Amino acid sequence: MPLQPTTAAALELRLAQEQSSSRLPSVAAGLVRGGELVWSGAVGTLSGRSGGEAATAGTQYRIGSITKTFVAVEVMRLRDAGALDLSDRLDQHLPETAASDFGHVTVAQLLSHSSGLQAETSGPWWERTQGGEWSDLLASRPQLRFRPGARFHYSNVGYAALGELVARLRGVSWDEAVRTQLLEPLGMTRTTTRPQAPSAPGWGVHPLADLVHVEPEHDAVSMAPAGQLWSTAEDLSRWAAFLAGETAGLLSTETLDEMCLPIAVNDTPGAAWTGAHGLGFQVWNVDGRRFAGHGGSMPGFLAGLRVDLETGDGVVVFANATSGLGPLHVDLLQLLAEHEPHPPTPWTADADQVDGLELVGDWYWGTTAYTLRLASDGVLVLGEPGLHRGSRFRPVGDGWVGLDGYHEGEPLVAVRDADGRVGHLDLGSFRFSRTPYDPASDVPGDVHPDRWH
Image (cartoon, rainbow, N blue to C red; front, side, top):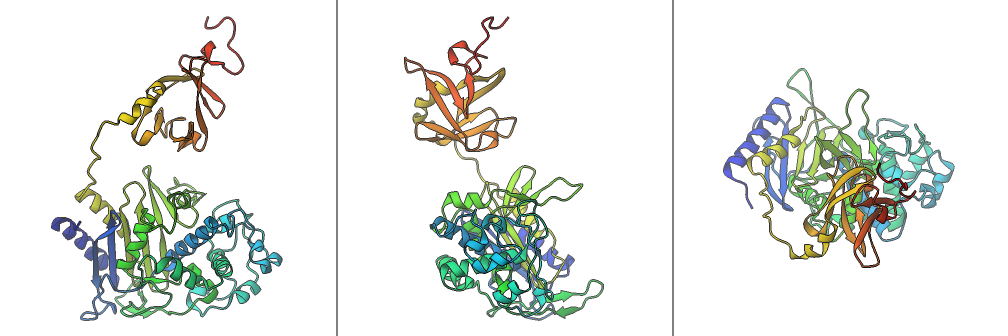
């Protein structure tokens, strides 16, 4: 559904402001809602000069590290197909790494940037020099900077290793695997490993003068999985829709959710953490609201992908400058939410909840009171999720399993008496009774014979 003219005008104004105030040769962006591109725009010229070729939503820009998300999805697809396990050591699949400093790191650690592997290559600045083969990269003897699993440490070299892993298990190059397994099925025909016209040249803008400097473009070869891809606002918006859940059957909902769980926190001393890494995607915690995606930068280019995991609204942004792009992606998403908020879901009665009525009401864990209520889709809600040990539970077989909070993944079972009535709840061995320490609820440790006194 197209946006209202006033919404589009506000978005176009913000895009123009960013191009002008941040001194960007060109900038392009797109917004996704309901799995569809609902708005796109571009401002500036590809050369940065007046009268030059205008940027459009179909112009290719280098997306840098957003490339890593495609590699990560392909690794997870291999996991789901049984070709690997996330706890596998790298040298189980790439035997030549056994003699290296990092052959023992796991696939999960590489995906989440918690392997401890060095950030950049040991040779010249790889983003500005012609790349070498995997054997050359391995011969440069990349080193661990930290104990695997100890902390978050972003590693471009780690994604070079994951690209080689994909190539080895698929039997084709990493980029051919991504193209045939992901890009072509999703119709992303303008996402490529090298620029295809119309494409934006990369520029460095002088920080103290209105001058530009040519930035190099080359094949990074073994380092390409860390940042080689080019895409457009139109194409990358399809990937934003993928992250929002429109995966076209290429990835299960469960695996996508798994990839967006924060694993390694990007901790900045003196500041509350707002960013983390999951299994290939960056995750942001903004006032309790979760976003996922990835940023991208290469000499001459900046890019961003971000999706609101609750609403599915997504944004992609591009600029052909080495630096200068501000929080445009955040502002565009906020403008969309402010001008065209999602309508609330209408309330309707649910007759299927009748069977769960015997569980609702007050329950006690020791002396702490909780209220259990039924929500939509058969979900049980214990207390207030996110507060103390409040959690939600989904039905599984004859019981439920926790969806969040302290009890995430833990089983909840309604224990019945001889007459078939629910006597108490067993939550991961914790006993919940209708009254505090109800002697009829078989409280572990027994109830003192003096009872309450």
